Every structure is written in C-alpha cells, then in structure tokens.
Image (spheres, rainbow, N blue to C red):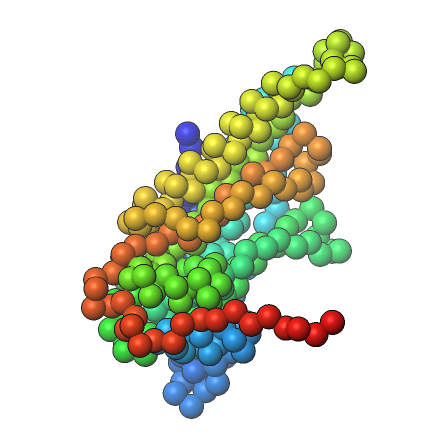
Length: 282
C-alpha cells in the first residue's frame, strides 16, 4: 500500500514567501511588543488561557497545484495513484509551510488547524490547498507539549476538546491525514437491466468504496505511527468529487494524533472547567 507521504523536496515544502516575513515579525511570537493574531473566538481565546497557553500569531501555508490527468478502466475498481500522489503532495506542502511559520514564532503548537481547497477564475485547472491555524505557546515555556520531533504540534481540535485533552494528561502531536483517489467501476447495461426493480446490494460499488476508504484510513494511521503518537481522536472520513468526473472520487481521512504526558503536566484540579451556555432567546 503506497503511503505517498514525505516525497517532496524538503527545501520546497518549507519555503516561506517573503511577504510573510513582515507579518510574522510584528506578531507577539516574534516581538514582545507585537500583537497576536488568531482565528479564535472570544470563548476559545479565554479557554486557551485557562489551559495555560497564549496565542502568538495566525499561521498560513499554501500551495497552488496542478493536478495531473489519469483515466481509470471503465469497468474496473482501481486507485488512481497519480491523482492520489498529487492530492498528498499539495496538502503536505501547505501543512509544512504553516508549520514553518509556527517555527518562526517559536511556537509549541498550532490549534484550530483547517485544511481546505479553493479555485480561482484564472486557474480553473489548478487547486489551491490552504492550511491555517493559530500558533500557541505554553506559558511555562518548558517545551514539554511539543511534538516528539521537537517542533510545534498541530491539531484541529476545538478549544473545548483541547482543554479536556490537556486535563486528561494528553497533548496533540499532529494533524494526520490519509487520502485515496479511486475510480469506481461503471456498471454494464445488462447488469443494470437485470437489477431493475429489485432490492439488491451493488457489490461492485460496495467493494470499490470499501477499498478506497480502507486505503485512506490505513494511510492516516501510518502517519500517526510515524509521528510517534499513541492514538488518533476526532477521526472523520470525507468523500469529495473534484474535477475528474463522477466515477473518480477522493476519500480523505483526517484526525488529531495524541500522546500521553507525565502526570506533572496535567492541568491542576483547580483549573476552571469549560461550560456549555444555552441561549433562551426565541
């Protein structure tokens, strides 16, 4: 099972546009007199402080990528590995550049990671992959919350879940993903006619979707193992149809890999507990 990860030139994947230098230089992470920027809500900002972290700056990674062409066999279930490779490479470059900005701020982690795609009118054959989040630093400044490789952790957990995770004595390691672009076989005319008016499982479709989803989940799990984590929380599997036709589909599995911390790093019992507020307005 090809994993497709870590195949880009490292100098390219960590490249930072010069335009980002001036923005990062004036944030709280690089300049004590600077201001922090974040995509946190007010509630998330307060809860982050109660967990012992401060925001440093809003970090971004981007890659505009031309996705190549690959055609699957009409009546066969098969992975489109050229397309899978492209979707992996583009996302990894965006994530690596976002993490490089966090390193620039000497951050312990990135919270609220979002990974999305968008198109522009001037480049409809290209997709932009954008990774965003808020770089944070632990107020104690010991670096114990960083990933095992000594760099900033990444996480797509909400501030509430992040708080609960820390209270339980665990910390995020990495936002992990697995993807598979798969060609679901077409069904022949005779088979379609035989099934008309019958309740019957479409085995060819079931098998194709099953295999594609398992490939995506397996690759996500392999990333978590490589990151030296103990597990993954918040797993989701999305199904996306892009520009390749109705029978070529991407299965994207994502989650946050976590690891346990020593007992002395757990939040004290006196830490405020997050609460849920329900408005009563009509």
